[in-house]
Picture 1 (spheres, one colour):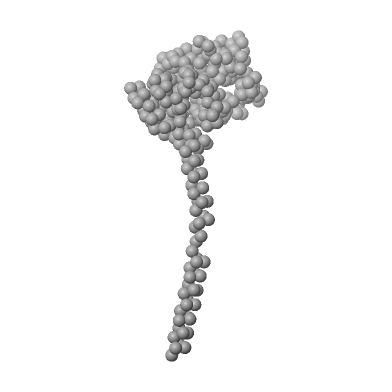
Picture 2 (cartoon, helix red, strand yellow; picture 1 turned 120 degrees about the vertical axis):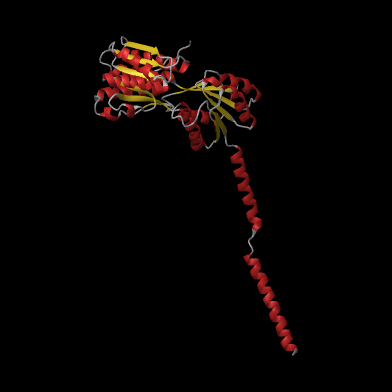
Length: 348
């Protein structure tokens, strides 16, 4: 009887020891994992805190397929290529500009981009109160302390268009027509004249302003007037109204050069090529400068070298243009990119 009791106790003790050993072996050793886990968490938090916060303020809607859409594409490109944390406000009226800009500054944004020179006054009123924030005016001319301007080089755009027009022209007469009288439009037309005369110093370059970005009929009428004077290559820089110049060229069977975007699809047998402006490339380039701590209060011109200005494909004209003509056009692009051609900017 006692022997049986001792055996039972012995078996119970063995069982308890076995269970304790098994439990110890299966329990995860958190002591060594915790420091590593915390270290990774700290690294992640530090990385997040270093992420550049960028706000974009727009005068119109992001889906306008034009001016505002190009800046929105720029913000998305900055998020994708630079890893920034982006935010935007669209349809900002003049009366709300200062409030919206100040709101982003108060929220701790590192970089606030206002898309249009019309934001210059509001940016300058807010900027001094937030010296650590970088304020950027697209298409502006302001450069002071923590305010800079970002410009897709309109002079280079116009220069390329003028050079191409001169290369293509058989009559020795070309035309560039702008919309409203404002610095970016005037700069493009000045560049056009410069580019055309770089190719042919004695070329007859006609320029004019219609006073409207929406009046397609007025643009067409002015383009037709120039074509009737012997112009055989035209360019319109007036947003929607630019279509009028292409329509006139199509009607009179002369050539046109697109502005801003690839416009070959508008008139495939008329638009030889287009000089495209990319705000996405320009904004990414400036974002890199800020991230690298190389920011300066100046006007940043982004052009051919930065990929912010480039030539669209020749499309159907690829086989219509003589090889030497295409080679001459492409050489102008490469010479601007390398700095061999230095496009002059007006000091007025």
